Length: 105
Image 1: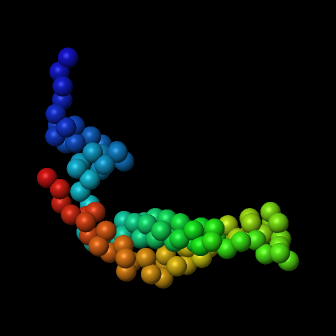
Image 2: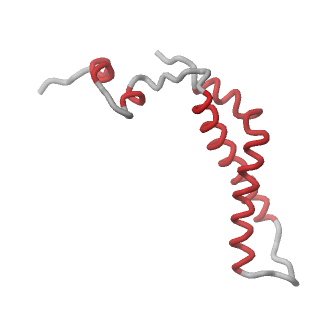
């Protein structure tokens, strides 16, 4: 059984997975990749932050909406995370994106 080196596999691979096999080299000025990176990192960060904040606040004694309120809060947190990510994710994901797109040997 012959083992094929990874370099040969990457040069002969085709299709959507071929780009992933080629050493994960990314163009530093790819706006679609930057937007996807900002969306994922920003929404993940802000979603976790909002979930942690919700855990610190107890349920009110009066005017508590029950399970419906909890579902609505989850949806509200998702929308807030998306808006916060769109507004400010690039400011703290910039250094992470730069490291992500560095050329690797």
